[in-house]
Image (tube, rainbow, N blue to C red):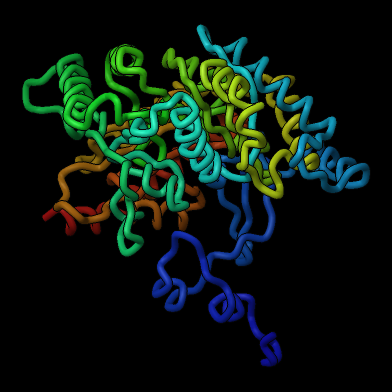
Length: 461
């Protein structure tokens, strides 16, 4: 405990707190940004400034801030059963009902899906760690101990634990951590705007990337490649939409080589793309689905891994011989988190938030295109549902024009995230956002872009 009297929160933060994914130098020099309250799509700082949160936190506050239904569900669950572990077959009603609800929701909204069970964890990172372990377990049980390598993609984001951080395809997250681990491979980023070759059509770009995956499998040996992990839309990488025909052709390659598909829906799940799941948006047929963020709208740390029948049948048939599956966490299936998740899903469904995402997605894109129209430094504006990105172009490699714009946006009263892989500011407002709030956010972003233009011009010259 610090004994200095009247220590400010800023100073206390600088002397006590180790911030995730933050510059120690920057925090020590400039202090933290302290937030004190939030409601709907607005957050308030200790300075009194109110901002429109066009990031829904970190892509996660899907139903918006201050939802009393979720607070009440959590309070009642804490009173009834504040904790129950799930080891050794122990269980609890809210978690049973949530697993059943998730399986039914996925089966009903993702055509051709064949999902069997749900495993619960605490975060998107550990959901993807779970995927790595279950892929390993699956192939060991099948008598294929060499089939362990996992292909990810450059620009992907799958978390920051040792395994999920290795799956992540952004070099900044690997520096000084000795990542990626052995057995994790990265194929090219499927972003046509930035990586398409001169004169190459989008369809030809897709074919080139699929050929690269085929060549990687052939080079490594199909008997050593276990899985391919993909976000339906690459979020942190830059809101990168799959190019024409990409997932259909990829799925065919994976099926032919007995390679599992892990769909990382940590960001895209629960309405973000305008459908309940990104797998439904793009026709994926996954073997494992990683969920978090929108599962509880960040009112409780919780993740879910949905497992296919293909994998479950192998696990179940080996169970008598193998005994317990020695994987899990203290808080796996937490009954309070499950109760909050059930209340969250009810709010999303009864208030038509998935439909609102589909309806207002084009409104958000039009508003951002109007806000950036005529600006020579904006290269592309894209998105699906309430998930959009503004990409900047014409700057030296390694420069960060999007960080300049994001800083001015905060000053103008709108939160947009400067992403770490490409010069993109992202927009992913709560799914309860209104057309008027989108319009106001775009107006503030336009003012921020105008204010940032002199700095952008100097950076580009």
